[in-house]
Image (cartoon, rainbow, N blue to C red; front, top):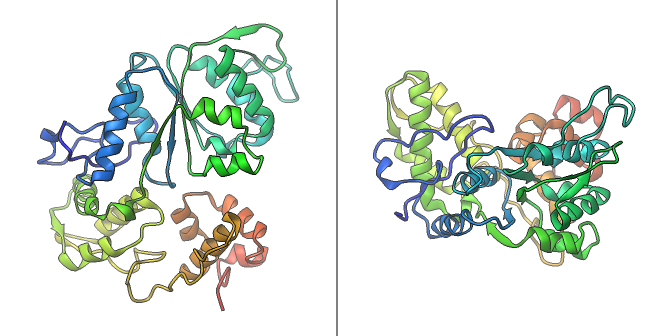
Length: 356
């Protein structure tokens, strides 16, 4: 297989997008195209582990394409004819995590007015993708460990033991080794899940992939909009390559699509107003002084980064949440947790988290 791959995104229900002109001969893995050595290593690891039944742990920042790789692994496994079932554990309330994973009988708890099949049953003989595995509550970690060890579980409110044959792929943007050391994640479960780790590098570490990614997203956007956009102007491409991309590929796709809407024909210009967040060497962006200073805890780094991001976006919670790839409610909770503003400031989106 060629070393040229491109990492883009497909929605949970859609087929992978068609490759751009001139890329078809590269035989990409489900939309994975680019030429950086880091990405080529990721592709090789996907090819190596996909035919096996081993659990896979995909790590990387938000927006790097972890779910895309999970789908690529499933499609190249013997389980491909069966279903790939996905669940984002960060989006599931703690009280409902067990019911989502293992299902429940009618009357198992208040509001359980009918039987519900859980994700493990739905994925039987297929693949289960657990996104944001670091968010799984401690009680459900024990239940998950049992399924991994014994291949069996009970629905909530039921006594019958059910057996399943599931290939598990997990993903997280957290450092689970630190979570284990600090007692928030079970060590035995970590080793069960982390049989074959794949780390997806952030976009800022493989800037050589930015031009081909940007052109790919532009071709898709121009086709949908019915525009004749010849390419990206040189100055805009320089800005794209200098930008730090805290939201990674998902943010790049968003920037290109928004810019394409503002463009008629000719070359695409990426307005400064479309780029938000920290940029490398760009005027108008505030430097992240001290965010990654030595001897800081992970929580302090998170607090400083969110504070800086809110300052850079001038308190715009919608834009800040988009960069972080979280919903506004989650961002409100983080702002309140780190005491970065007041509820009134959160609602109006002005003055939140501004640095002196």
